[in-house]
Length: 527
Image (cartoon, rainbow, N blue to C red):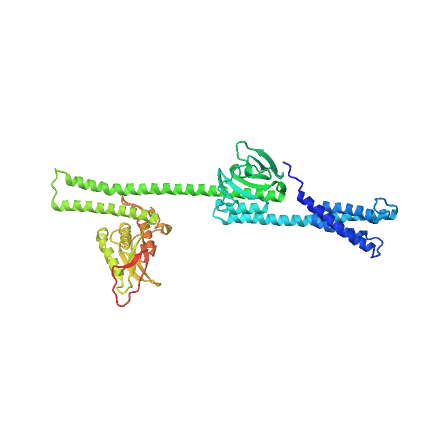
C-alpha cells in the first residue's frame, strides 16, 4: 500500500504562508524603492524565502524563491506589469535573486526539516521509553496493556487503540468499550527480513464486522503481536483517513510496542511454565516423600500391634498376667507412636495451609518445662532430664497445646537419635527484648555440619549409619518450626556443649504487674 498521500491541510498552510510572506515583503520592497529611494531592494525577498523555509519546509521555500523572481519582475522591473525585461542588468539581478532565493530556501528548509526530525526522534524515543517503562514496571504484561495502548494512541495520532490477545480484547482506549470488532477491511504492517523497511498492506477479511460502523473516513491498522513463531494477538488502531498512513517514526513506535508486548508475553508464558513445572516437581517430591515416610512408619507399628494382638488372642497359650500386661504395654506404645505420627502429619498440613491459630495464654516457664518432661516420660524411658530453669523468669505468652507439642517433639527427637544413657538437658534464660529462650540439648552424636541448615525442612532425615526400622518421618522438627513461628517465636539448631544437638527456642515474654502470678490467662484473642 502506498504510504504517501497529499495532505490538504499541509498544502493549504504552505500556500497561505507563501502568499502572506510574498505580500508582506512586496509591500516592504515598494516602500523601500519608493519613499525610501533605494534603486533595487529585490534582496528583501530573501526574507520571505527564509520565513517560508523555516515555517513550511524546503519545497515551499523554493516555490517562494520562484514567486519572488516573478513578482519582482512583474511589479518592479520596467516595463511594469509584464514579464518583459529590457535591461540586461535587470536580468542579472533577477537571476541572482532566483538562485540565491533557491539556495537560501533550500538551506532554511533543510534546517527546519532537521529540527522537525530531531523533535520527531525525541518524541519517538520518549514514546518507546514510556512503553518500555509501562511493561517493566507492571507485574506482568496484561497489567501494562492499558498504559501501552494509551501511549501508542497519543504518539501515533490514532483516534482509538485496542489490544486483542487471542479472542479477547485485553485493553481499549475508548471509554466504556467492552468489545472491539475486527474490521473487515484494514491495513496490516508487513515486516520484511533483515533491514528491509516494513510496509502497510491492505487486507480484506470476509465475514468480519465493518470498521466504525462503515465510517469510510477512518482507516483501521493492525500490527501482529508475536515472539518468534508464537502469535499472541494484535495491536489495533483507528486513524482518520485525512492523516494518511503513519509516518516512519509512528510506524517504529507501533512496531516496537507490538514487539515489546510480544517479548513480555513470551517471558510471562515461560515464567508460568517454569513455575508450573517447579510446582509439579515439588508436589511429586512431596507426595513421594510422604508416601515413603508414612508407608514405612505406619507399617512398622501396625505390624507390631497385630503381632502382639494375635499373640494375646492365641487360645493355645495361657499367658501369665505379667506377660499379658507387657504385651498390652507394647500395643499401647505402638498406638502412641501412631498417634504422634498422625498428629504431626495433621499439624504439618495446617502449617502448610496457614491455618494455625494459636490461643495465647500467659504461662510460667517452669510449669511448661516440667509438664513437657512429664508427658515425654514414656518416650524418654530411663533417661534422666537435667532441668535448669530459674523460677524467677518472666512468664511466656504461648499457646499451651502448641508449646507442649513443640517440647514433646524435640524431646522425642533427642531420645530417638541421641542414644541410650546420654544426658539430656533443658534450660531457660532471658534473652533480652522481652524474650525468653528455652534450650533442649543432648550429648548424642549430634548432626553433621552440612545437615544443620536442613534440619527444619519437611521430610528431611539426617543420614545415619546403622539406622533401624524407626527412621522417623522427618516432619517432627518441621512441625516445631511452624508451631513456634505461629506463636511469634524463633527456633534454631546448633551444636551442643554436651556434644550433641541443641535446639534453641525464643518466645515472647510478658511483665506481670501488681504481684500477679503467672497462670493460664487468656490474652483476649488469637494471633
